[in-house]
Length: 253
Ligand SMILES: O=C(CO)COP(=O)(O)O
Image 1 (cartoon, helix red, strand yellow):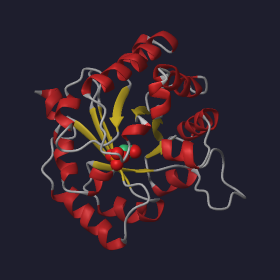
Image 2 (cartoon, rainbow, N blue to C red; image 1 turned 90 degrees about the horizontal axis):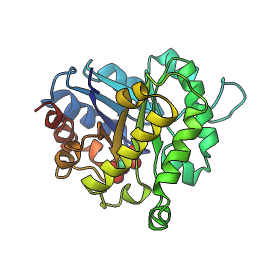
Image 3 (spheres, rainbow, N blue to C red; image 1 turned 135 degrees about the horizontal axis):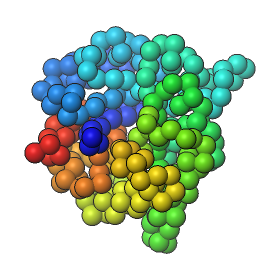
Image 4 (cartoon, helix red, strand yellow; image 1 turned 45 degrees about the vertical axis):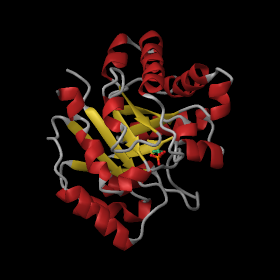
């Protein structure tokens, strides 16, 4: 079975109740391919998860943008994986570069979170990606491999993992990776999984791209053989997210 196209919308720390209503309306009214062709997951801030989950069309799912690294308790301000499960939130984004850089989340910490969230029954969108400095110094492949390794060392079952390759220099900058740049890294990540995990996991794990994805650039990116979808930031708050979901048809064409 092929890898189903995956489109995630990461709303980050954005939205008011009115804006959330508008975005949900756009999502619910948009013409999109069937769930056999594309999996759509939107990730509002925690406080909006229940309302979005209850109002969203049933074939779309919600994800949290983070969760705590272990069982809940005296961890002020944190949200545990158990709470997400309890609320019926099926997925979580972990290791986003904004959290790695602004909040100092190390690859080991992210790996621990991925393992804990999976063990609680959540699906995980695990983010990796290099900074501009790392790309310019030629260490992109080492960086993304090391970030992936920290996850691989802590988990056995990859069924519920999607890897999001998000080059930091492309996030929120309008500087999208070229299709060739994205494909090159996706192929290296798949090859890393093949060598270090298993050929089956390499073949079945979806590797999605994030960083300045728009309606204008998504089709060409979607045509790359090792690119299995997108994690969209800014454009996921707008009508063009529907066009990005529709780029799934590039694969099924
Ligand atoms: O970080 C991202 C998604 O997680 C990408 O953000 P932008 O699409 O706004 O560049």
